[in-house]
Image 1 (cartoon, rainbow, N blue to C red):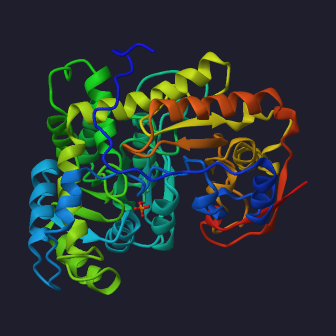
Image 2 (image 1 turned 120 degrees about the horizontal axis):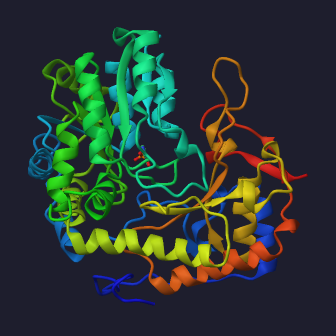
Length: 459
Ligand SMILES: *Cc1c(COP(=O)(O)O)cnc(C)c1O
C-alpha cells in the first residue's frame, strides 16, 4: 500500500469499542428475522457497520471535552452562539436556524419556500429531502447530468447540474413556478459524486437571471470541497474552508445534516440570507423542533458540532477520509467487482444490476445483495435502488431508478484500512458465488420511506 496515495490515519485511538463476529448459522437466523432488511438488524449482531455515515462519526477528544461545557439553558445557550458564529463564519450565510437533524431543516424549508404545485429542481434526489418537498405540494424534477445515472462511466464531477435541462424547465414551466433549486454537494444517491465550482457558478448565474433561489443540501459540503481542491484547476492552493465559503456564496441558503460532515452524532441546521424567510422559519421551528436557540439539540451537542465543523475543514482529516473510501473502491475494482465510478466521497456503491444480472429490478437485487453480504461476512450495508426510490405519490407506481446499488458507507474516523480489507475480501468472496443470491418480494411495505422498515422474503 502506497503511503502517499493512501495516507495512514491522521489520529491515534484513545477509546475503543469491541466488536464481535457471530457464526454464519446465527447470521442466517438474524437476516431472516430482519425480513432481509439490513435496517432491521441489531447493531450488536454486526461486525463492520457500513449501513451509513450518518451520526456514526467518532468524535475527537476536543469534542468530548466540549460536551462538558454544555450550557443547558432553555433559551440563549452560549453553545448556540458558538455554533451560530461558527456556521456564519464558515458558510457565510446571514441566518442560522438549528434543527434536530437534516430532515428537520428540510421540513421547515419545504413548508416556507414551496407553494403547492410549484416545481423543485434538484441534482438527483435524496429520500427525506424529496419526501418533504412532495409533502408540501412540490413537484420534483431531476436536472442532474445524464451521466450521473450511468454507474460505469468514470468522469469527474458527476454530480453537476445539466444547464440545458435547467434552461428547458425554466422555459417550459416558467421561473415563477419554480420554488427553488436544491443543489446537493456531494450527491449521495449518485454515489457521493461531487459538483464542480464551475457548475455551481454557472447554475447560480442562470438562476439569478431568472430570479430563482438556490438552496444547497450542504450535508457533505466538506467532502465536495476536497474533490474541488484535488481535481478542479485553480483550487490546488485554496484551503478547504475557502472552497466551502465560495461554494455557498453562490446560493441563498442551505439545509444541513450535522450527522455527516459536522463530525457529530446528531443535529442539523438551516441557513438563509432572506430576512422574511428567516422570520417564517423561526415561527415554525418552535412548533417542530424547539426554541430558535436550540432546535432539538442539547447545549452540549451544539458545542460538539461547532468544534466538529471546524475540525472537518482540516486538510489532513478530509484527505484521509476521502482516500480511505477510495482505497476500498480500488481494491474492489482490481478484483473486477462492478461499482459506481469514480468512487465518491462517503461510500463505495456496488452496482447490483451488474453484480446480479440474473435478477430483474422488480426482484430487488440490491436489497438481496445487501442481505447476502451480511450473511456472508457480518458486514452491514444498505440498499439504494428501487426500494429506496419508493412509489410515485400520484400514480402509486414504483419509481424505477437507473441506479440499483448497495452502499458501503464509511463512518468518519471509525475504521482502519484493515477493516476496508476485510470488507473488500467479503465482497470478492460473495461475487464468486453471486448466482446464489435470490430475488425478494415484499411481505410488508410501509407507505412512506419504505426502505427503513419494509420486510421481505426470498422468492
Ligand atoms: C442524511 C441526509 C439528509 C437528511 O439528514 P438527516 O440528518 O438524516 O435527517 C439529507 N440529505 C442528504 C444528502 C443526506 O445524506
